[in-house]
Amino acid sequence: MGRGEEDDRRRIPPARVLLLLTSLHGGGAERVAVHLANRCDPALVDVRIGLLRAAGPFVKDVDPARLMVAPEGERRFVFEGPNAGFYRPDRLIAGAMQAPIAFRRMIQEWRPDVVMSFLKGTTLITQLALAGLGAARPRWIAREGNNTLAVIGDELRSPAAQRLVTWYTARTYRAADVLLANSQHMADGLIDDLALDPARMRMIRNPIDAARARRESDGPIARTSEARPFILSVGRLEYQKGHDMLLTAYAASRARGTHDLVIVGRGSREAQLRQQAAALGIDGSVSFVGFDDNPWAWMARADMVVLPSRWEGFPTTAGEALALGRPTLVTDCRFGSRELVGHDVAGWCVTPDADAIRGGIDRLIEDRALAARLGAAGPARVEAFGMTAMIAAYQALFIEQAALGPGALVAA
Image 1 (tube, rainbow, N blue to C red):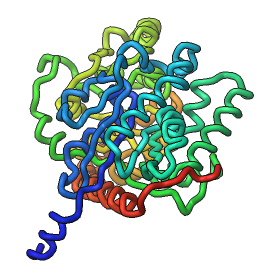
Image 2 (cartoon, rainbow, N blue to C red):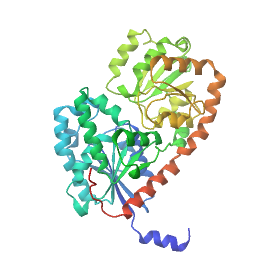
Image 3 (cartoon, rainbow, N blue to C red):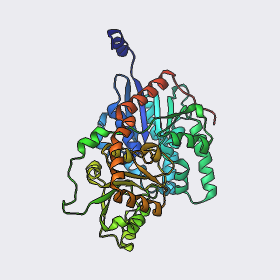
Image 4 (spheres, rainbow, N blue to C red):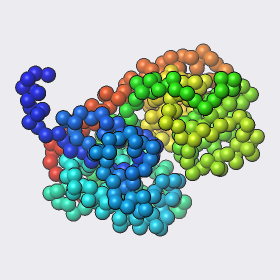
């Protein structure tokens, strides 16, 4: 960079960006927000994270000066848990009446050039927070990192309610200046599922912190060296992640005779999954580890990493398994998993059902040449989704949007 370019950088103020989430409980969206807050060049992009609650394991990873938190959030905004819990009357009232006010106050205090909302629930709140701001309204990026229709189906059992929420969600997304997906399959699916404008759709994949995964992979795990080899799954213990299918698959697999199953993560279905393991007679071979700050140490020692999801966005865990050279089995669900691993390239894809998962487990355990070939291809595969390139893509998007000046809610 020449002297003139350096002087220009000093004269141009950084784009002010506010990332909006409910909390920093563990998930792909929250991890992306933390990476952006920590890694964006502050001379180009000044990032703050706006939270309804200062809760979750990733809070400790962010400079407190970059956090904005709603007052009394611990009392008002407890949204974590199964998706259907969001529709409890008390949570709906808090979401519809109090959460938009909290976000609006953050926007008015920080006066960002750009706001980015993460996932459906926060995006619905953000539209209400931005309404009526007029010329003071920042540009709005609505980022979706999950299968919206599947989430709505998980939240609501009534077909009429599903149709209503789908209609309102689509209307909300159409009001954003930019729609952002984290896989190409998701971008295409959102356009088709919600009749969104392709011209406003962008795609930036989740950054994979391969360097950290490798650096932390030598850490200790709560497992003795005399224990059997193990198959690993990492993810929230919720319906989406398909651990019930994995337990059924493992119980029927030949691998059950040679390998244990270790599940890292926590969630509302843990008790139910433990009961299922006991009913299947595999509770002595299945370990529920809970949340671990260092899942990479488990990955590095696993014979195989399995993501048995019913749906996804762009599974960061699978990318970290690839970075560590582990044989990786994923379900070919909507969206992102096949796009990330590539079937028979750096991972193995099966349909999201217990019998197919069982077949995939046995194939990779018994065909060691196949498992070794897939594992060896992982590190090169994940380079395309590396941290530097993905952060640069986000910075470019933020700077582009900030330069366009205040937005105005688009007619839905």
